[in-house]
Amino acid sequence: MAKESFDKEIQFLRMLSLTSGAYNRQQYAKRLGISVHTFDKTQRKLRDIHLSLTNQDHDSDSGREMADLVRFQYGESAEPLLLFLFRAKSMKESEVERLSVILHTLQDSARTAMELLDACCADLPEDWALPDEKTIRTDLKYLEEVGVIRREPGGRPYRYALQQDVLTELTPEEQLELYDFVDIMANTQIPSVQGYLLRDSLKKVITANYPQEEATEPYIYKYHYVSRILDEAHLFPLLGAIRQRKRVQFQYFSPKKPSTYSSQNTNPKFEREGSGSSIRITPIEVVYDHQYGRWYVIGYQSRRRYVKFRMEGITQLEELHPIEEEHMSALKKEWAEISRYSWLVDTGSTVTVQARFFHPGEGQRNFILDRVRLQGQWGTITPETDHSFRYEIRVNGTTEIKPWLRSFGSSCEILAPPRLRQEMIEEWKEIAAYYEPVREDVQLSDYDEAE
Image (cartoon, rainbow, N blue to C red; front, side, top):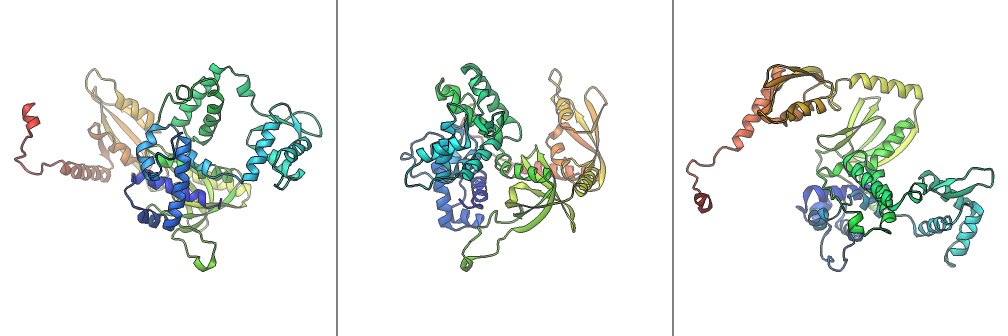
């Protein structure tokens, strides 16, 4: 599979989830910057993965488009959209067969690389090219890095064994409890990718002792922030680049642009310039916005200095050369000082925001105060009366904190700065205008009159 196709599928699923099938094929293809033929091919591939993942009959849904499956049947499955991508990004058939033979051979006992080479030569199809020792050692290194196998203590020749003690030493009841814990944590905490993959592996183990619908479908989660899951495909490469102090480059599609992706044609005759912007940065930090379910990457450029990008617009991410450790430490220290009062990633002028919050009615739990304490970050709370309290915080600009304050509705009154207070007044006037009656003599329906 081409390297760019993973980004294509991310944007494909994002658009299907956000638009709920509102576009036709031509509109989707134009928005994605691909041909209608490529759109249809990608849709068929993801549709087949979706049906096999949810154990549905391919023939019964042969006429359904992927948009309809995501829109109408997503709630019937607890599987997240991100797992579609990992199943679509498959390995070569020869790699799958070779790794399968290695893992099957290690089921009984620990083996050396040469013993595994003999097993592959004996079990692989006769018409296939046989692997050499270097290929087997590369496979073992990969399996060891991802935690599937471990190297046993002792000298050469090294022996390798399956890393499955956490499963084999647990009773079926303990395996089920572990699955439920991983299921809840993967669906409620961030990041989630490893949790989903671990849950997928646990499911295969526990279904041998429990019916699948009883064991693996106790909860079904419906995601309102699809980007939170889809953007984790870029999260770990960026975190790795930060740890290794490497610069990165990518094509970036701003949320304001009409397109979200652009195909990279290998034929020079049809090569064209993508509509995205080519970006090179030194990644400094990754930030998650809980309110909107968005990921941001903070980077440094010599010309523009500290820049911010939403991960949903990143495609074709590649690592470049590393920078010096002293330089990276200096950049992180400088960014920590700049973002000291950032509600999220805002770097505007520092202002002091003051707001008055009102308690709910008598006899009710004070959920307003609880929420401000939980989400108010470094702001201070000062009791005023039995019915209200004052909240004060210094932030870099008011753009990012304003939606949070507005979400409290009539339970929050902005006191300062005056400009933010006036902005809120104008916004609430606009909202109130939406609820003005269309005409004064609205007739009641027969049902209302009967009531």
